[in-house]
Amino acid sequence: MVLVMAGCTASVGNKSGVQYDENGQFVSADWRKVSLPTTDGRNLCLEAPFDLKEEEPIEDSDLLKNQVAYIYNGSRILVVVYRGTLVDPENEIDFNVNTFMDGINKEKHRQEIKKIEHRNINGQEVTYAEVSLVDLDNEPKRADCLGIDLGSEFWTIKYIYSPSDKESVEVAKRSLASIAIK
Image (cartoon, rainbow, N blue to C red; front, side, top):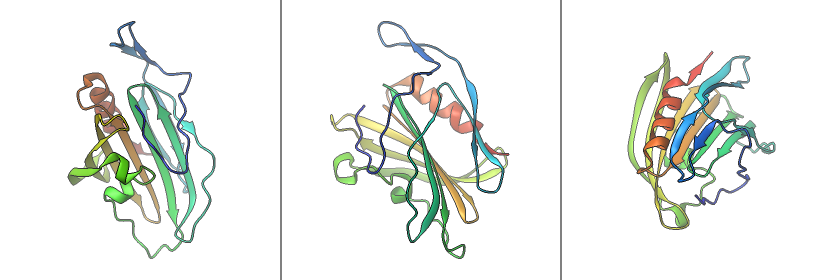
């Protein structure tokens, strides 16, 4: 899977718990809890069969500070967890295709929101979006995205994979359902 993302490098983690047989078929996954710090001392927690790699620090801008991205770029799924804080606490974050797909080249990947809705996951109000796009080989991809608004701090989480890859669909579904702020 090749996606062009501005401002960050996606690297393959070497401690993936996802296992495939010689034909590339999903065999098993060693699921683990991942805990990522919020700026108020709590943690964004999720379960995943892979490790997320913290990327290089992202420079503050006029609108955002305390930005950090965590990425897993496997052969069949790309996961990006991003945290930012609004410089002006009076501003509000609007979760939409631009927010969820920030950093992904819009012209090359032809993104389109298929569904956007509010959900409650583990007691946390979130915005869920399903986005269709294509990779650089013109293969269809699906992005399952969550936006979490914690006041001036917010998180976006996206899982990008082939919609025909049943195992990646299940990985995204299970991981998304486990997300909680604790």
